[in-house]
Image (cartoon, rainbow, N blue to C red; front, side, top):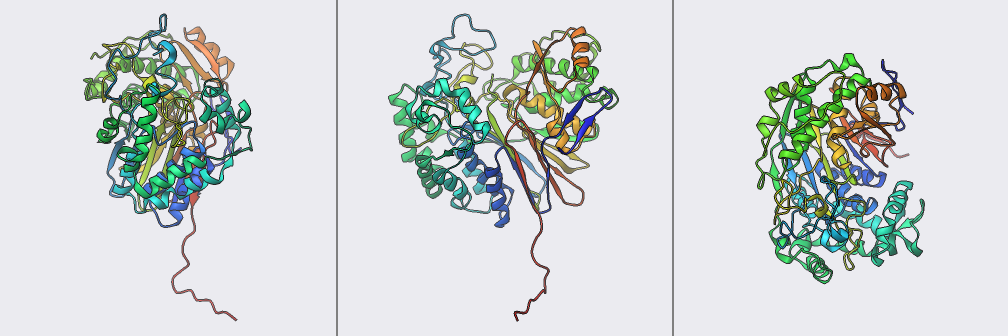
Length: 559
């Protein structure tokens, strides 16, 4: 344990992991083998983009419950010239799907997109058009320096020879077992003899290794216009799914400009719509800027109360006006303005919980992954990727060895809403690959998985760093809170006295083991060194590259 944090509110937490340091590069992901794959690319002379793509392909092998080539995601890239861009590789609605394709389950809650027979949750009908593979290959060609075959070698190796299951993977398999047992191909790998793989047992994915080898030779065309796509389309046709050949050949990634927030002299950059995160993190920072959070203290009832109120405001506005900007008019300027923040701030009661409605007009899963990479040249990647729920659609496609997404569960099955289904529509996401600059210089890059709890958790990490002066390790591991208007979830480390005070102010406090998933982050120091940190909520591991070449002119005599 590296730290014991105690502040004026009496909040105590221990950091359970150690940070890493480096001078020539850093890779942080939610599995040590994936971080090692990225670090190998840096050691071989590659840049942060090479490292990121190697890490992502390896994560599809070692975190198969979270990420896959038939998934979607968002990448925040800062290149050496200081420019930022977002590569949107989110999944889209198949062209055959209509607003009323699914039938809402009678009696389902308004904010839960349940459908009859769980068609949008499990099986072929739950699979949306994949964007991950195309986005990764395009990004490598545009910004990387190494070949696709080279960066994919670690993933191929681990898929073919196997790796040891972690306790975390065992728990995830156990959580999804009831649905996965209905599909023989996925059960054969993760539930042999009907029981979840135990920690330490080997996970071998020979069929997927062959798929990866083929992609390494033929690129994304193997799926989007080639024989791997034929296997996917044929499977969909045979099992009632919606993805057809035209969905694959017409899919395009989108490059987007970041949302920029100014907070206490810092510049915070986050993803734009269809992601909700950049807009609403900016909105919440604008409101919180009017309070002295440092004086209130981390983990105090006063600070948590303010966080809860701004979260409820953000989620009310998100429900009303977030979505794919090609289909929904998102009022970005209004939501991110200091004037609007002032209006909302003036309505907050400092000692009473309130219900909030939207101030503007016009669901997602916790099972995601995130990784962050940086090199010595100034290239940085923070990217969040997912197949949505644990093990996506809970099936494995024979011939590919791939677990596909169940992104269709994120759309509203009821026609006439901001998140309703439409052919080609991209889903709203809370993915938050964030970067923070001070005086024009990059200081932090971070992100995490966790569904609707992602951007509130990213916000709290930024506040931990800027307002509370935490170290990077403390900031990613600190206790979190979350609400969207009902229960106020607080992690167990928040003291009973603080919970009691919040309850007296009208909050419905619920103590929970975790809020969102494993955050990982990189800090950029003035002297050019890097610190990497990953939190206890996942198998996160930072790997830093230091050292370097021998000093010029050195000669050794052999005697």
